[in-house]
Length: 100
Ligand code: SF4
Ligand code: SF4
Image 1 (cartoon, rainbow, N blue to C red):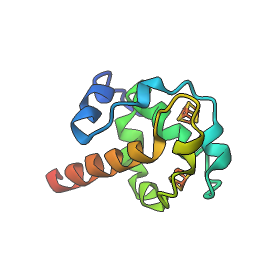
Image 2 (spheres, rainbow, N blue to C red):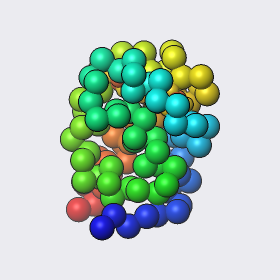
Image 3 (cartoon, helix red, strand yellow):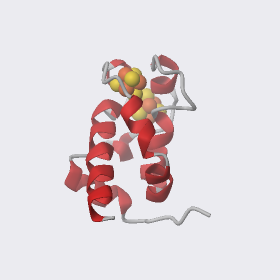
Image 4 (cartoon, rainbow, N blue to C red):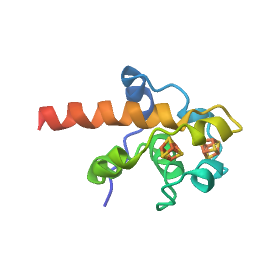
């Protein structure tokens, strides 16, 4: 079972992330993403919103699939900047690997 961390969205700010809470989960980013992979990147933003840090860390390798093409950021109606969120998640994952 995934443990939820209610402070996760706030914790992510130290990695540069400050737009995830603007996302209203419309799915436009997942529809335009060339990876066409399992609701990527929308699900990652939702995981931040609900505090599912463990779920992201369990599947952290998929963060490195991102091409940083910018299409998600260009099309997001809420300026949630998914590409930058993925960079912040990478920083968070690397720091967790270093500690483990
Ligand atoms: S396009 Fe923007 S608002 Fe829509 S799901 Fe993606 S990040 Fe959220
Ligand atoms: S920046 Fe990454 S998540 Fe966004 S559309 Fe491109 S490959 Fe997909």
